[in-house]
Length: 247
Ligand SMILES: C[S@@+](CC[C@H](N)C(=O)[O-])C[C@H]1O[C@@H](n2cnc3c(N)ncnc32)[C@H](O)[C@@H]1O
Image (cartoon, rainbow, N blue to C red):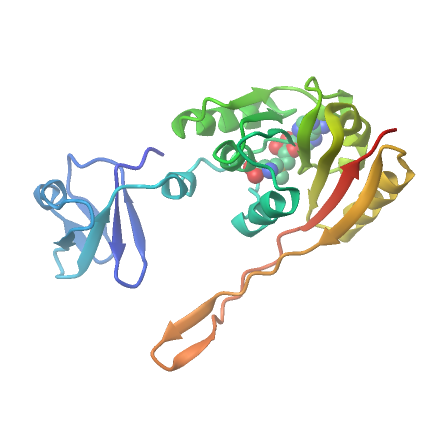
């Protein structure tokens, strides 16, 4: 979804306004289109029930949060860990598989030089392509291919797997990565992690670095009521990191 403007309440509730050509309805009342047009960036408008909302232009993260969802996307906390532990940056070329909704590919495109993302299913590749287009990311290429069969790119800085059987992509990753490059696997279950790490261990192309789980705990801060939020963020997945060596 293309986001025109954001309406944000003082408590942080965000409404995504697609078009400024009509009144915008929220559960806090509606905002007249004339008021939406008049309020500058950061300015306030009032809803029909008198609630104050602030108008902001969308940043990348706002548009990203509204991408079309097909398969389950990887959460931001895990994307952050992938970027932090591999150090991928504006000079890096990265391969990602499977694309799924293209969430990881789209986020990485804002960080690295080039992203190649592999997806076996045409319907999911179409969703990923739509998201790449709507976020206007020229440096993402979606490849409609089975990544277990091989990766076209060579000498890449990182290969990131979010696949049901990541161990089946280890050979393809070894052929695509430059020496010193990172192989990362994101899996929701421990049997997948065990099989992946065992296969990496048998491969002569990688040294195993670590498997980790990132746990995010949000807090409620309201005057002296300062405590972890009651609704905890549930389990997402485990991240395993390996590094390419000279075979
Ligand atoms: C959980 S989704 C990936 C989500 C993605 N990381 C995101 O953030 O949007 C897993 C995807 O892997 C794809 N997939 C499964 N096996 C594959 C293969 N051999 N080659 C390429 N893609 C594959 C599935 O079709 C699915 O879309």
